[in-house]
Each structure stands twice: as structure tokens, then as C-alpha cells.
Length: 124
Image (cartoon, rainbow, N blue to C red):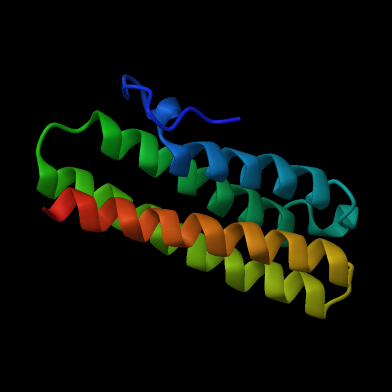
């Protein structure tokens, strides 16, 4: 499990990044089953959006001033919302089962809340 008292030395120590990474792995596993005709369409878009979530958290972590950090965390949140839209589309066109959709949405909401907390704490 995650160590909550651990000193944060790397972006990988952030719980928000860890949960986001779980979301990346889940999305990659689920999109493997999408039709080959979507390889350069929805599959690619979903994967780019989910990778962008954790990539922007990592890049924000590496920035020195709070304004820059916060901007990257906002970008991460925007990518997450984009992903949520794309997951909804995937469900509606029949690429995701109800349970897969629910699992993905639940984790994305958790990551969304963590990003919001990260943004708030960075503004203090």
C-alpha cells in the first residue's frame, strides 16, 4: 500500500500520481479490446489523454514556482475530464461493458478529487 508519512522526493511518491498510474494501466488494458478500426481513433485519443494526466502531474512536480506547478496540475485535470468524456463515448458505442465503465469512472473520480486537492494545496 502507499506510505502516507513518507517524505515526497519524486513525483512517484505523490498519491495522486500513483492513483493516476493505476488509471493508465486500467485504460491500456481495456483499450486492448477495442476494435482495430479504432487504433488511430478513440483508442489513441483515450490513451493520450490518460497518459497526459500523470505526465502533467510529473512535469508540474518538477517545476520550481507555484504558478507553473499549478498550471500543469490544471492541465492534468483537463486531460482527466477529456478522458472521462472519451470513456463515456466508448461505453455508448459498445466498446466497454457496464462494469468496466463503472470501474474506470470510479477511479477517474478519485483521481479528479486528488488533483483538486493538489491544486488547492499548491495555492496556499
